[in-house]
Length: 321
Figure: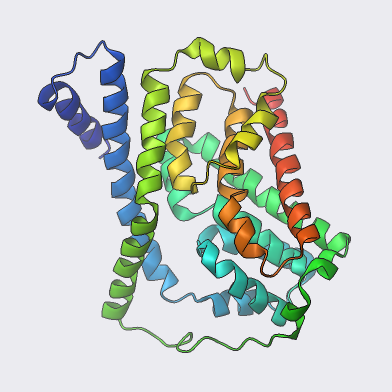
């Protein structure tokens, strides 16, 4: 099926635009057209299918699913739910309050908040399509492990004391209509609404990400990355994490950049560190979480993620062949 997108990119680049296939401009344009059409097709298809699933899965059901579980079971379930329930960052505060009110350990809630932005069904589908199953499995397993370890560390250190006091006093009931069953037509309408909402919020990041990837793919020489981001530079991984913080995007937008960087020979660990930093250490997410977390907890959260991503980057640069 994906040969159709490559055919369309060929026709557009070499036929409609008449670009010479031997030029860097043609390489960049072909990369852009191929990835944009492929990604938007996958976005619409996967979001619609998962929207049908999410029409029966409200935040209240997520909360009730975690409630009453053992601590380690809660960590594992939290990161798993974070991977399959891509609630947007605006849901972080009500989800956090709801989890705490239900008696779920703060660590499990933090594990959910770590995993949710990094891993979702769209990102996994794109990773499989563009980068292959090995890197996809690596990315997902690493994201889940970082979430579980972060949640366990929060509970082990007793950092619930760094949650804002008012959170402990709030009693959150179920959202109106949260348990209402929808008809097939209503579920389809909900799914299309998800497509419109999510694509409407991220289309710009997709175009920016693919555009940056196209520039890297077509114009930046390989020796540039070998010099600044290759295995010979011992500081490449922490620099990638630092560079990712202001580059706010979701996992969908950063994947084309990762594709281009890997094609230029940048080590896998460095690319993973950049991807995870971009999607999980975003400034908007930190600003939102400040409503429920004290500054110390927010600082711990950011520091833990930064150290984890740097560690992941170095480990995979050493052991991944």
